[in-house]
Each structure stands twice: as structure tokens, then as C-alpha cells.
Image 1 (spheres, rainbow, N blue to C red):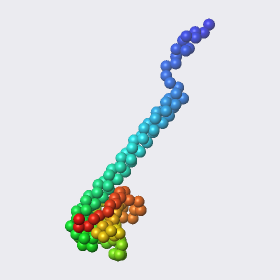
Image 2: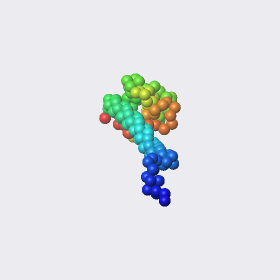
Image 3: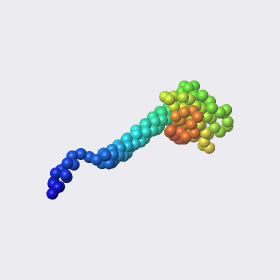
Image 4: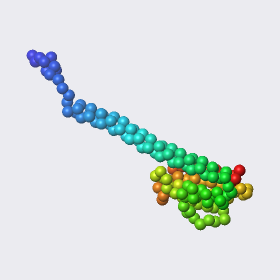
Length: 148
């Protein structure tokens, strides 16, 4: 009579199928976690760039606001261009003035438009990551009252 107890007690390891299945499961779990961390890092970097661009736009807006309190529209724009190192993008038209500069690794554009009320103008500041970008990283708009 064969001894059944001895034949079953000889199972002391894992089969090749069990080892492969465990490696595949561990790989799937690790891949999921790593892809989550990579996506999280990309999102954090993108958020940091938007915050930096917004801070730069706000800082420029405050400088321009300070200049707008000192003078009228035409002389104020000239002072902004000279003191803040902006360069003219488009020729002056009767309604719109466009300027740009590079600062802190970003490309900024200023657009002034005359308002229907005298002594007021629209101001749009856009901050791009690169000069040829279409979509700005940050954009701020306001209406300035000159010489108040």
C-alpha cells in the first residue's frame, strides 16, 4: 500500500506558474503607482509655472498702476515703455497700443486700448512661456484711470 502522506508532504516550493503570476501582479501594481507619481509631478510642475506667470503679471500690473496715477494716457504709456523696458509690437493706432518684453524666462505682452470715457484705458497683460505660444500661462485685465 502506497504511503499517501509522504507523497503530499513533498510540496515545499512554488511552481513556475505561481512565480510568474506573482511577478505579473507585482508589476501591475508598481506600474500603477509609478504612473500616478509621474502624473502628479507633471501636474505640480504645470501648477508652479502658472503661479509664477500669474505673480509676474500681477507685479507688472502693480508697476503700471503706479505709473498711471502720475500722468495722462499718452505720457504714461511712454513712461511705462521707457522705465519697464517694453518694446513696441505694433504701430500706434488711434485705439490700441501693444508692447512686449522678456522677463524671468517668460514673454509678456501689454495691450492698452482707449476707453470711451476720457482719462481711462483698458489694460491686458498676457504672460507666455515662449514668444511664439498662442495660449498664455496667465492673463490679467483691468481698466486704468490715468492721473487720478
